[in-house]
Image 1 (cartoon, one colour):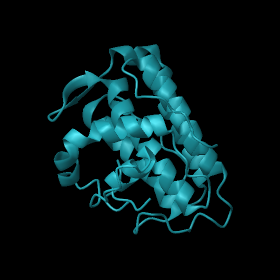
Image 2: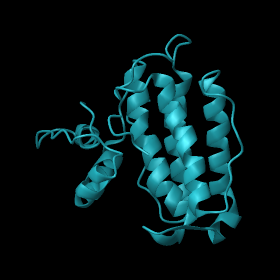
Image 3: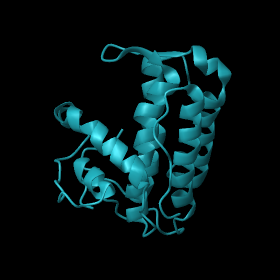
Image 4: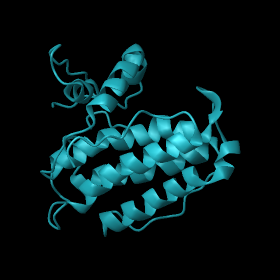
Length: 202
């Protein structure tokens, strides 16, 4: 999940409601992130990210480490361990993203449910799509910025996410997963508005 202080125009599309939609969205969104992981220079993993307490490798580590616990907390899905992010961020990410995609591609996931006191029971694929895949999308900007790569995100997806988060501003802020909101001018791009909303300086 997005930390508190933490290809041109990748078109990842809107978050889908079915397992097939969620699988397709994850495939596109994670591919955009993978391109940034592959684009990091060998000496670039210790570069500072826009999140003060994170280096570039920590952006990857964050995505790899929080999802297994999330899944274990509300479903019967267990992801296999991956290589060390400290030793080989690309190998760790590649193994992780393949495991997540396998879950979403599996027709058996149609019958899996994610249960939590806050959300009740929702389809597992929807939970992954709504929370994890959205996080990958936003952290693509963090990794790109940290390592001097193209930080352009899909404007349509940024608009969808920005507008969808507005009614939940207070709840999201109080969760501790977002930093102080940075308001952008009305004529700013939706990418800048989204990045400012999650507590980054575009």
